[in-house]
Length: 406
Image 1 (cartoon, rainbow, N blue to C red):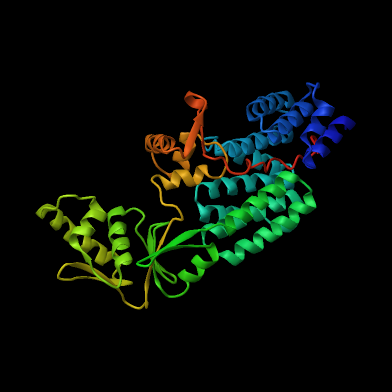
Image 2 (image 1 turned 90 degrees about the vertical axis):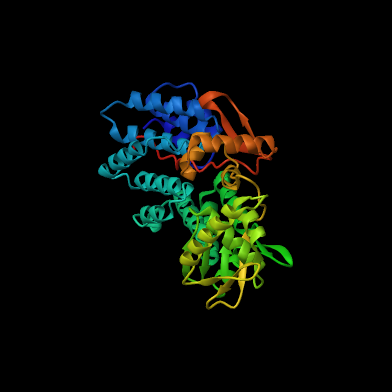
């Protein structure tokens, strides 16, 4: 093997893209093009990186399927970093199959990690766990092991399992130190900051206070009836009723939960659930219908009873009712939460991640921009959005940079 190609690949594996470019910047052969593409990706020049990787894949030709698959794998990771969720998943699956057929276990595992990270980003936690189940982290190199543990931690954080998330981040930090890649260490530190940041706000008659993820977990396991406005469900220990697709019912449940143990007048309920400023008989009739639906949904956890002036919520087994809200409640919070990862997003990628229409996302982005919470750059299909101010640095968990031709 060409000694310059070997040295460049080793530099990339150590997180030194400039050192790699010093060795292959002027070369146009296929391995050099691939390494230049990975180096440019690590330097965040993703557009040029994609062009170089596509040229490399064409230059390798059909007689070098493993090298072509590695180029597709690198392109898939760039798509993930730039939040191009529309990039064809079938291409990644085909590349993984080729790598598996030729015994490239390291890059096959890396392809699975990419798929798991993509599923985690889209909130498909069960699918991400199923992908991780096909990996044995004991056989992964340190860089890939750190990426694996970061996905495990991300799933645990979303499932509000603090101990599991902290243990995974400790393992990720250890693996990142073994890998010696600064960007990887920074990614682990960023994930630790997320774990330690306020996760919710406790809402009550006496005001609200911020809670960490461990406090949220303890509250959910305490036996209290928790009305969670972060994810729009009502739960008591392991029993959960989701109202994510029933916004009116959740608005009623939250209003009654905030008023507990007192009742809440009908006029206030109408204002909270329907935004009604002037109440007539049609509003009152609709309120009775929605309250009946809420009783049916919550019958195993709580009773919703009528009083002289309104309605009251009474838990069946729990001793108290608590309401959890987002740390900072703003309109279009879900869009803002995705933008807050520090990477630039297209409106189409946000729509895929949130499972909603692109036009709805565009309206939300325009509202956030008008409120000074987001900004865009580029035009047309190249338009991207970021939160203001941009926190931290972009995710740079790029290829473990195997030697071309291995």
